[in-house]
Length: 162
Image (tube, rainbow, N blue to C red):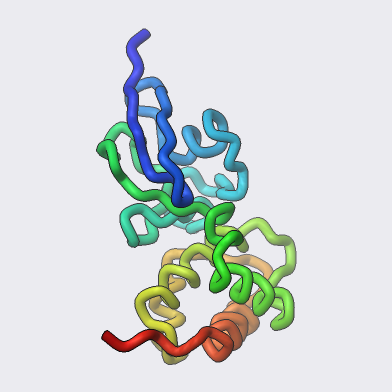
């Protein structure tokens, strides 16, 4: 059986991995690399539970063939985000705002929130809704999730001016 070999920057570190052609990024992350924070829910790219950041853009990993990602691709998962100060602030805000219920969608929500705040550190409610549009939650009704993102944004340091 043939395999694909890739070397990516995963959560800030170089990692080499081999996998069968056509294997989904979600499966490579969870099964081959042991990063189980990203969840599979729909398997169709509709719910966002498996969201990761690839080259600074949030993507659903359940429909992305890993072989499409060339060497040098930067991938950031929930495990990498939780090691960053902004990621910890975001996770704490989710807890304080009561935005975590069953927890199944939360890794994808936090990843999408992190991607949003990385580009727009002081988003409006409309921008938050748009930034989280690809993520579904069946428990919270989104009000507390939006409040969590706003809370995290209020705690982030002002962006550095160039």
